Length: 465
Image (cartoon, rainbow, N blue to C red; front, side, top):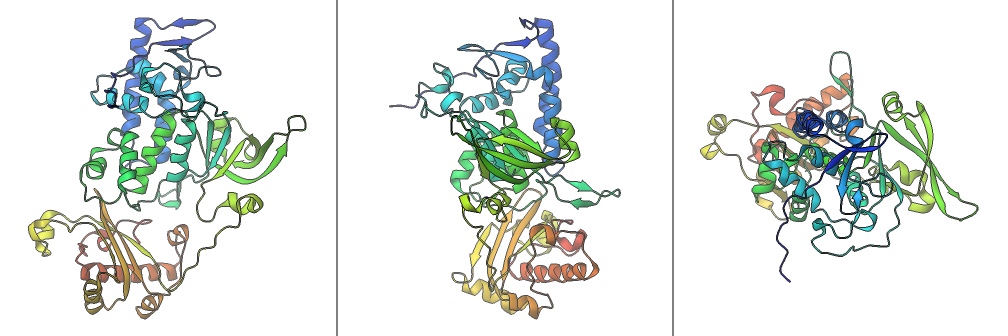
C-alpha cells in the first residue's frame, strides 16, 4: 500500500499540575512559552566544539525544570499522568512552546512524533502511529540500567525508552580542569575522533533530528554530501544525548558502576539486579543520593562501557569473559590535523585550493600509494584513513611496530586516556617525535598539514595525536 502522507504537527494542549489540575491561562502560557523558547534555543545551540556534553546537561536543567515537569498534556487517552499515561518531555515542551517563532521547530517535533513506539509507549488511536499496529503489545516495562554514555549506550537508551521501559544511564566520566584551565580528566564527550558514517547510520541519525540538533557546519556535510564518510564522536554523542533527554531517559553523569548481585523475590521468584554504584559529590547532590557508594535495584543490567567493560568483568558468570585485545605487529596512531585555508592550500600545491577527498586505504590494494610513502617518508605503513571535518581533519596511520622503533619511538601501546594524560618529560619527548613522524607520512600521502600553523599543524592537546 502507498505510504501515508505526513501528518501535520500533532497539536497538544497543556495544563500545570497543582493541588487541582487547572488549565494554563493564556497569559500564563505566553509567559512560560517565552521563557522556555529562549531556553530551548540555548539547549539546541549547545554543541561542540564550543560546548560539551556537560554543557548540554546544564542547558537541559534550565529548559526542563520543575515547572515543565508539572505540565500536563492532553492526549487521546485524556490528560497525561506520569504513572498511568506518561507524556515524554518533548511532548510537554511542544505543548508549551509550539513553533516558538522558529520554522525548524515544527519539523523537529514531527520527527520525534514519527519515532516508532512499542509496548506501553504506544498510544492506541493516535495520529502519529500512521494507523500502524503496536508491534510489541505484550512488552512488560522494565527498570533498565545502561552503564556507559557513549554512542552505543545512548542509542540503545533511545530504543529501550521507545519500547516503554524506564531507562537510566550511568556515566562516570566528568570533565575536570586544573585551576589554570588545563584539562586534567577527560569527560565523556572530549574525544573528537570520527567514526565511519555508514549509509544506514546516516539515515538513522536523520530520523533522530540530526539536521536540527547539530550545527549547520557539522550537519551539512554529514547529511548532504555523499562523499562524507564520518561524523565526529563528540558531535554524535551530543546529538544522541539531546534525543535521550527529550525522550525521557534518566541520564546520570558522575555515577560509576562498581558491581551487581542478583536478588530473587522469595514470593514471586522474580530476579532483580542490586547494583553497587558510586556517586560523585555533584551527582549525589543533584539526585539526592549519598556521596560515594549507593545501592539501587534494576530489572535489567546492560554494559555499554567499552572494551574494558566493568560490567562484564564483574559479571563474567553471566556475560562471559572479557575479550582481551591482542595488539600484534601493527599499531594505530590517531592524528587530528588543523584545517588549512584555501589560499595556503594553493601555495602548498593543492589544485584550486581544495582538500583531497576522504581516504580509506590498505597496502594490499593501494600498493603504489604506500610504496610512495615508504620512499618519501621512509615509513612502512599498512593502512591509512583520512576523513575531512568542518573544523579539523582526522587521520589514522597503522605502521608496523618495528617501523616506529626505527624512527626512534618506543612502539608502546597506550590507551586513549594514557596517551592524553598530563605527561612526564619522557612522554612529551616521545609525543613530539610521534607528531614529526605523522607529519612526514601525511605529507607523503598528499594530505594537507601545515607546519606553520599552531602546534605544528595538529590540533591542541589532548586530541592532537
